[in-house]
Image (cartoon, rainbow, N blue to C red; front, side, top):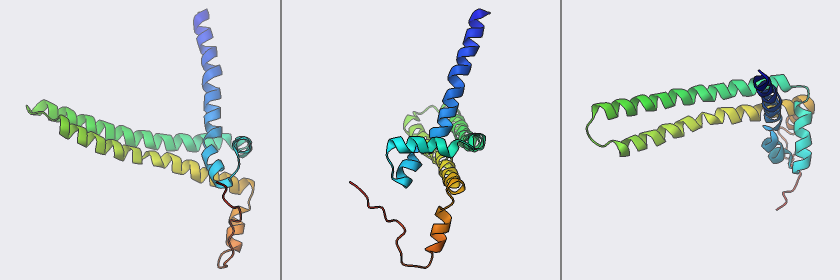
Length: 156
C-alpha cells in the first residue's frame, strides 16, 4: 500500500507538469519565427499567451492530436491487414512490395500530423489577436496600399 501511494503521488507530480509545459510550449516555434524575438523573450511570451487560456488550449491540442492519432491508427490498421493477408495467402516473397506499400501509407499517415501543427499555428494566431488585437487591424489598414508592414530587417 505505501508503494502504491508513492507511485500515485509521483505520477501526479510528474505527469501533470509535463502536460502543462507541453501545452505552454507548443507555440514556441511560432513565436520565435513570427515575432522574431530571442529564446528568453519567446519563453516568457508562451506563458503570457497561455496564461488565461490554458484549458481551451489543452482542449484544442487534444482534439487535434486525437484526429491525427485516429487517422494514423486507421492507416496502420489498413497496412497491417493488407500485409497480413498478403503474407498469409501468398507463397512468394512480398518483402519488397510490403516495404513500398508500408512506406507510402506511413507517409500518408504523417500528412495527418500536419493537422496537429496547423491547429497549433491557428491557435497561436488566435491567442495573439485576442491578447494584442493589433495584427488584423494593421493588416486591414494596409489593405490596398503599397506600404510594407514588415519593417523589421532580417539579421543573418
